Amino acid sequence: MEKKIKIFVDAHSFDTEFQGTQTFIEGLYTALLKDHPELDIFFGANNMERIEKAFPFLDPSKILRYKKRRFSFLRYLIDIPTLIKKHAFDFAHFQYLAPYPIAHCKYIVTVHDVLFNDFPKEFSWLYRFKRNFLFKRSLQNAVIKTTVSNYSRNRIAAHYLILQEQLYIIPNGVSAIANNSDREDTRRQIKEKYGIENFILTVSRIEPRKNHLLLLNKFLSLELYKQNISLVFIGKSSINDPALESRIASLTKEQRKYFYRIEQVDKEDLQLFYRSCKLFVYPSKAEGFGIPPLEAAANKAMVLCSNATAMSDFTFFEPGMFDPKNESEFTNKLKSMAALSGAPVTTEKIAEIIIEKYSWHKSAAAFYQLIKLNSQ
Image 1 (tube, rainbow, N blue to C red):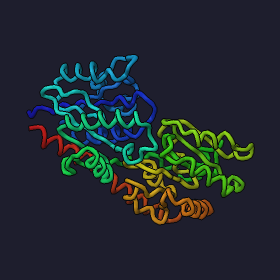
Image 2 (image 1 turned 180 degrees about the horizontal axis):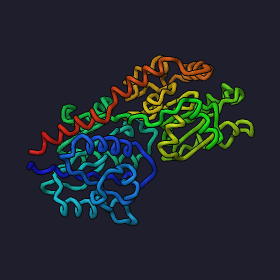
Image 3 (image 1 turned 90 degrees about the vertical axis):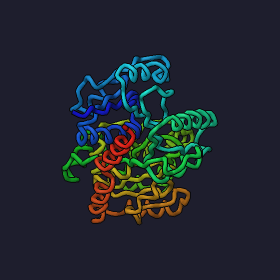
Image 4 (image 1 turned 90 degrees about the horizontal axis):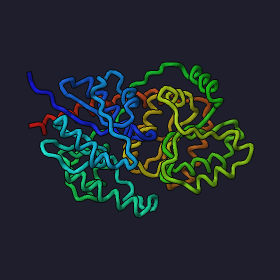
């Protein structure tokens, strides 16, 4: 019997608030575990319960606990090297950062984006300096280098002087839609649980580049709240956005009745929000990929999406795309789409395109081939 390839996955992102790397790890490795049982896959994290929830069919012995430390970066110096040596892993997969190389273990590093270089005003100097040093070193030590989009591959190659052909694209997928309730039912569930109805939705971490302020300002200037339309932000604050916080603080009593800010919801409720929103808006200035608008559209929501950076690939959203630097274009499209009484029939077709194009099983197949090619 052929020896199984042993893979260690650093899943420490599951120890913190929700972020895109969790979606990537969960989607990719759920497909790999189902499609390639010949792989022996282990996950490292401190919050074992969240890994168990993400991979309910996984043998608990495959979840390796990091020690809870005051300085979390010590996992790279102590926990991960110890686990790699103890279990003799053939490969170790990291998001962005990897420890120093360990003999006989080949590193896989996925860098999702280097947006802090292309949009330096959105990030502090120290933030950019530390990440450039660590990301470049991690990629240099990786046998397999991956990213999630053509845009990210081009920018990583340019900033770190890596040949593009050395960077492999393993795109994010969109998980199969589990909730088949009709829209009226999902709207009823959201109203009963959250007290929200007839709403525009955006989902992402809150930081300046995500451009929540543009959406809030236009929602207010168009006086959509006077049409009994609400605005819902779902996502935790990641990088402080003083301008947004100031604008929220200045809302009138009437405006506050139509504005909702929710830090986090579970997957099932997120699907309900997607399926029951009047319109999903993604105004981000920059993304290495951009999962939320795809998830929303896969749930047959009407989507108005930025066309910046990696999102320029989402041409199937046209004419529901806009340049986030062009405020008048955004205003006109937001006004016209918010005025529609129902989602256009094209939402069905867009959902079909996305589910076919962005498949975790396709990404897993491409990733598996990279492992096999480098396992000799």
